[in-house]
Image (cartoon, rainbow, N blue to C red; front, side, top):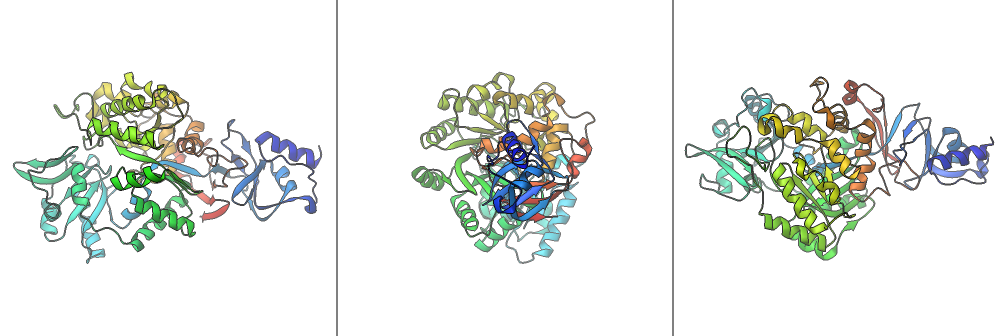
Length: 553
């Protein structure tokens, strides 16, 4: 077979740019910016085909094929010999809090603390590090990880920091502990009541525990970061996500000012990460975006609103159809009235925006599925999403397919929650929680995310949890409710092309195909073939966005 025929065959096989009149002489070779060759390239195209090489020009892939075919047809100013290692499309986290994660890097890190005493030690260290800070903040504690699993109280914080406001949020962001100084600044008293939230009171006095909407009463009093701090937060977050292979993030719940800053930094070349922004449903956001419509650049996509239906299971704020198994007559709660959810759904539909709603409990999922169905009317291509879709009553499962509603899930929630979720839900109801495979089957695809910083930013943890249904300790043996595990191929799709599809971006990214952005990663092991116990230890060697290297190990 001649060089030209080999090139044509390779291009035709993988849908690359059709190459013609090519010879092995440099005069007739097409100029590219980058050639990647000698790799195990998972294209994640429709047929999940593998290749060896591809060429990049002007930030986009122009051809995919064998090493011989690509190197004979193209010359480039830069070449990358993958040395047989694995290459995937750039990974996409379909549900994260990217900006909040960046800001949180400046607060006390409480993830993984084994007791409240350890939390206090971290706060003391934080105060010593930043003695002049107006507030002491931290995030990530989870009482379910402690020997004593009850919520902590504010007494120790009151004694240590009587004149400095302290607020520390639980790992899911749906509960917090505040000291008396913070409660006083926020005007919170034992008599404070609200829709969709709770100020915990015992024996007539506040414990300091705040649930869902009550958290905002205190955190709203924390001084806003200045622009320099915001820029640093975004750049620090970007550096960390590039190091784990993420090239796109869906950021759930942003204000216009943050969106504008991200856009400006991207336009100025200070920020390379691609962001799919879900807007907070604030009046400011509604007024501006309903008037001006969705906003799209190559790196920023603003076409959805993030709605919170209920709270989290760990803090018993998830809204359930039947009472919690471990608290009599407690159902959790909705964070707004049913009518408010119906009204915002109609508005978003009228103005052409995607509705992405946080729903954990089976009651919240049922309500949102029915509201979506009423507005959407049947199968459609509006791609409205239920974020988390964590506990779904069997009677409601088919509504995802019936109304083309996308379940957007975070597999590590299952492996984090499995130790105690059964206590909250009981033996029967837990069987209908974290049903990723059944949810995927409703529409034939499912986007995967992490919800970081609620969970770790590492997408390989997401992959392992989706496939093996185990945590970092390889627990439980055999996996948790393995009937709902995803195949390795589907897990990779969920973190690439399916995540892109949930954002209306499948024609520009999510696979290694001609015409798409040259976003890809080079890793040291192949998730499709290695043992499950090795998955969490996979290392990213290089990350590329638009054909430019943004991370090298």
